[in-house]
Image (cartoon, rainbow, N blue to C red):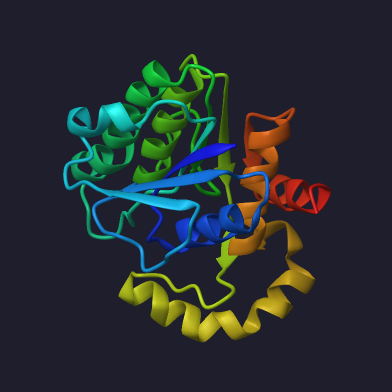
Length: 224
């Protein structure tokens, strides 16, 4: 399997890259982003590209892939709806359209979030925008499209978030992960589990197009 990954330097993306590189069924991982990762591996190839809204210069390198793991995202804190929609909805759909045209047999998996609003009419701005993005992706003629809605994600294997205030939060609540896992298993997962689940769904599909946190945990276990 040949995989394209966007958001490889983010916390979730780092976990997905790790699981892809460990999986013997994954032949190639192409990471596309504004910044390079710090990893080196014979299966990992990278394209550093500043303007992800315009992939015309690299289109020739984007064909022949079986799956795309779209892990790119930003926090909505401090952003108005127009700005958040541009980097969350508009960018995602722009990239997806190109990949769909070049790889119609591709499985596209989008990392959304728990609480996403599929009606697009809810009170929370980020949830409406995520819902709009999900709905647009589900209409695209890929081989298959799946939405991943994880809850709290515990970083493992030395993975860290790049966002400073996220790091502060993880420093406080991260040590309590065993407690969250014990009492609230439906709402927590790990970077390892998300990565494994995405690979399992890309390989074998899923009866659900939208996978909530408990579904992600189940798919992760089923493939282990």
